[in-house]
Length: 239
Ligand code: SF4
Image (cartoon, rainbow, N blue to C red; front, side):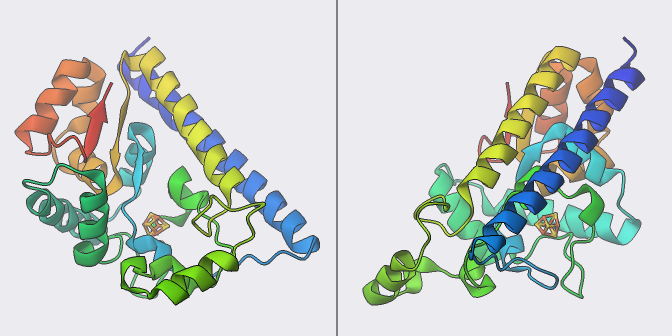
């Protein structure tokens, strides 16, 4: 199989997975609302876009191919800032906390508060569906009082959420399963899989010839990551 064909196959699968998840999310949300449940995601919502987004390589490549120069520069500056921020950080909770407090919104979010890559946004973004008002998606729970935390937890619909979060469990699980299928597909096509921070992966694809390095194999991909200074286990995982 040629390198071009392998890359085309990876991108085709991503597209199919995203369409599938989109349909599943719509149908699940319609059913839940019909049975009296409340879902608060909608146009203009953006608080979840301050979370660190992690994706498989092919999803990031699909995003990288859609960006214009302005978006590319925004992603580059995000990746550089994150690389500095994570020097000396070894624990996931600290990474997530620092990311939320320091990095601001996703570099792909537009000034109008919309996703700038909506048609190709990753599975992890598509599968995050909120059963509470959007203010909770941006809340810093460490700043809440005990009473506020207890009131939040008491109001959750435990039958559907990924407790103790307010996001729908089955949709997140479905997104994860699709990501795992994507990783398996990548291993079959290229001999390895790669998962990591969306902004970092997109930046590598746009500015460091990363897709070409991946087509040459795992060691070339690892060399490209190290050469660009992003060989941090919390940012990228090659398996
Ligand atoms: S890719 Fe789009 S939906 Fe996902 S965090 Fe960024 S702006 Fe939000």
